Length: 447
Image (cartoon, rainbow, N blue to C red; front, side, top):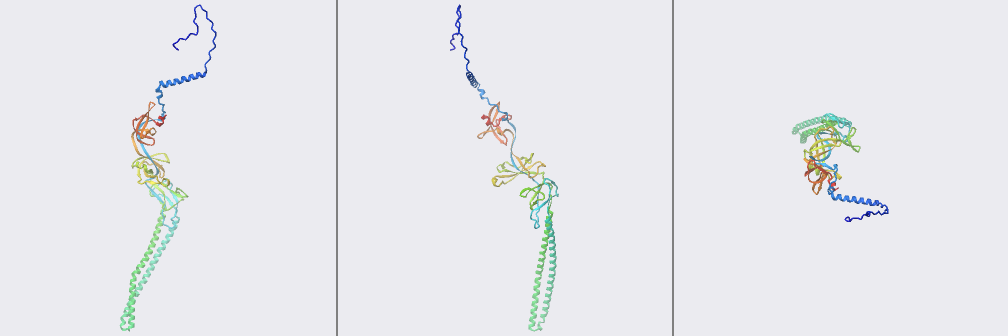
């Protein structure tokens, strides 16, 4: 025990006595290295236990949060937009179609021999297309011959009917003279025998009947001849009208621009594929192959899913982009909404979309019809809201919260989400502008 004195290893000296010699001791044996390492391990473990016991605050200190996982709460305007995809189109335009012809044998496709270049600017009255009119010219020559033949037949018929009418009139005069002579002969019946008197009477009655019949036939004859003349006149007018129609068809084979604007060529099914029309190709009569548009008034014709259609209204602002020009951004507004939903075919039959039209506010020469485009329509906005990234939002059931970083410590702050878009959220609650919130807070708090 520590309270007891240990006997001295050296004997006490008595005065006048000589020291007794002591035999030399063997050297002490050096301890093993394994015991030294064991001793050090015990010391380190004891120090660690003492540290944990004496410094609990060190155990509660939160790990440092990387700056990349922090975001600053800001105040600003939050815009929620919905993207509508479609293509550009012109508001004012003139549709150009292949001419419809009346000539027999020209109901087949027409060959284009001249065509204004796509994208060129034309003035009103400029020639923008011509079609091969060789067959039409041949039909026009044939039709002129038919008109001349019909007119000749009419003139000949009129002359024949005039001769026929004069002959009829002569026959009527002869019948009248025969009747008058028979009546005179009948007056001599008193001096004639009974048989002769009866013969005279019968001759007078026959002459009278014949004259009366010719008189009745006279207006009918006149009407018949007039009908024959009118029938031929109709034929002549019909042939003349065909000639006029063919002449008009020939004139329509050269197409002039009905208005000033930009030439836009449309696609045509030719050679087993859809491709833009060009010189030398054939187009069916009546088929549209070109548009002359006003490039200063353009719109985006797009569609949106019917489930989102209730978010749209007239006058909403939009940001417009073109796939062909990624750096071009234009502004516009909703100018039209469809009343009925349209569906697709096959696998998309049950997906219904609503047509929407977005007008482009500013003219740009790069915007031409039939370009693929999109419009981000601003459907809702929040002014002067506290904005945090959506990645900072966490939920417990229906309640949202964020983790605020204060001096390296995390604090749970409940918030109310007022509006969100693809990246940001406008919130209200216990946050202030300039606070630091943690992104992916669920992962951070779990570490």
